[in-house]
Length: 492
Ligand code: GLU
Figure (spheres, rainbow, N blue to C red):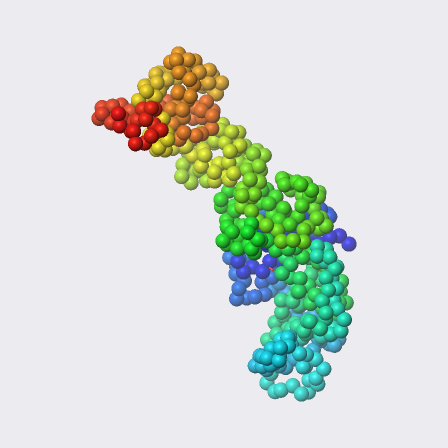
């Protein structure tokens, strides 16, 4: 029989990192073995399950690129089937009616605790004659769990794990109002969906014992279980909001690539030698459960960002353009025109080597769309001293007359200009950078000029010259380079 895995989230909130990793491992396991990966929404908790949460989970899976096979199974639509299984078990003696009232159960638990015992249900209706049922009490249906011996699981991650059957009580399968419990629903659905492997967080390990007992009572084969350790933060404490966002959508918002997220999630508890950077095709080829670690995995934001930087560098320029164009166009509509896209693509090869997130990448290119006169950072402002302004004026005239406008030609021309002025290239390139980008740091200046085009380059230079002219007229000067390093010496 082929491998069938499933991701079975309870749609009560966002898709969080733990859920995303569970989904990824199930997806990889299925893809690795040429099997299928199913999606089941465990939405039986009517009060806590919301359509918004369902939408958030589907969106998260879609963003991560984890596609499922077949249609989505909604647990809430299968209640009748779940109830039917409970009734068949009842008919065969594998379950029984329990007429305890909630008050009686509470009293029983309080008494047991007071006596230092366990607060498990004591099985008082297990063998009692239903003829003794008190009037007016709707019974629940409880599983007649084995009392002797032990239940052993050959967990694919944890190894063999066992529990004394005496430690588990007779769980409720159908509530007094006839609705099935979560534990029953999971077992029936896993069986009916033909699930062969259930990979999930190790907080479900205790459930696995109960579920296995129920499977056996129904004469069904339980899936192979693989309980993966929970995710912790870098400080070793269980992952929570204080370690950064736990919802996957937040990582999309800050510009993490799905490929980087998959890579980071994969490394949360799974390893392949010393490999850190693993693309999805390799992951599908290599993934198996024997390499899942038993110790808690640690999520590290810095590692995610550095993986993201790598995946950004590896991405095609056009793919990155598609990612950042809407981010840039939100503030600068020109970014979404052919001209705007041309400017972005011209600088992409260099810009993508520096960014750790798509937000950083977009930010580093936003200057391409700023309207002159550009706002200047203080450092850029200091680069544009009087001397520099005068040189930019002369450079402007040279550029206006220049034949052609490509990176190599511009570099040759500006170098020749610097030589003619008897100064190092930096004395020209840095003020030029400030004038064209508003900053002291940017992609290579000749690439920037080529990306902006002749007209925009000249407009930006001109805007700086106009401001310089106005300042000269009013006697207000920008500091000279001699005073530039010391803001206290701004006046000459
Ligand atoms: N619905 C459960 C959860 O979201 C998962 C149950 C299972 O994987 O068996 O934690």
